[in-house]
Length: 434
Image (cartoon, rainbow, N blue to C red; front, top):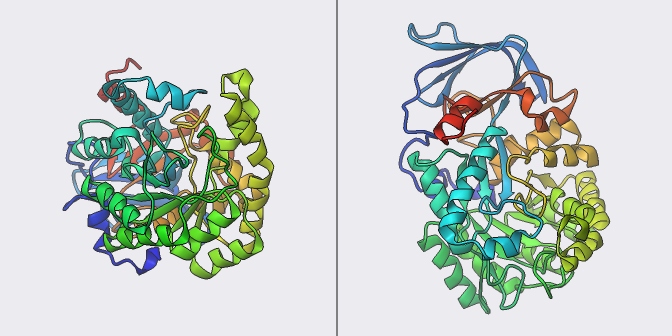
């Protein structure tokens, strides 16, 4: 469905008439000289390439001549990737072991201050774009606007506001608005759009983190999901569906969602449907990994640890089956769930690489393919002339060792919309002593 939505969706999705910026500073021309540039078509690095960035965009690859007044970064021996994209985060959560309880007990203003730090850490880790799929009080929408205006430093955010779940369903009373019946689901989606949501989330099944809810049980019906999808797509918004149970997954796919979030219990029919309809899988393998392995010893509530262990092995098996079948993939961490901390997002790239995708495809799932899912293929996700100058500069080759993406010392620079936002800049802007 994503490719069928016209390019005007881009302005609607971002809620901006003009160019994105990560700071209020107008970017000056920037030349990245002599680096190895990731080629999304060949899935390899092209050596000794110059990249010219002007007015926040990549203006030329291997330019014949640079402007007279240009800042130059010597990238000889370095590796350039597109800015990384995480398609499933909760920036308002810290990843504390009792994340849900802690957040409910924290005043909204305090959570907003904490969330600004979470956004900074995420950008510092090389993630220049994220999709935030649920926050209490729709704080994620406010954060997106704060980043757009330059009030805080962070990745550009596609924010879902509140998710939409059935009465008593997963996420209710916290990051989701309850709705029953197609008309009420339509209204709930319209409420998020009216509040400024640039993405939509629908709950098709139960989940791990809500007490008394079984992740193997379906939630919103196919008709309810279809109503929500219709409203979102009318407004050119991409729809992600929390879907863990087999029936819930298939309901969501048939209803026309753009991505299945988690996809724990896929069967052959579900995988075939995803391939037929071009539905993306955003697996978030990191979330159950930490819940199951951390357990009650780490302070995770017992009900959550039990369900995390129930989910873990089947989740990995479903992901591997989907990869083998050729299901479209985009990377998402579910960052903010227990022990799944802001700024550690790249661990998901390693997990999906190690479970069937391999390093090159895992990087594509975190750049080009993620941009395709989010409807941002004309804006970011590739090192291509005319796209946003979102670039991560590394001092080692991630195709040889993808784990370097999780190592802060391997990130030389992060550039967002043509502005260098390295650690010193980030820390200075955030008022943190480096």
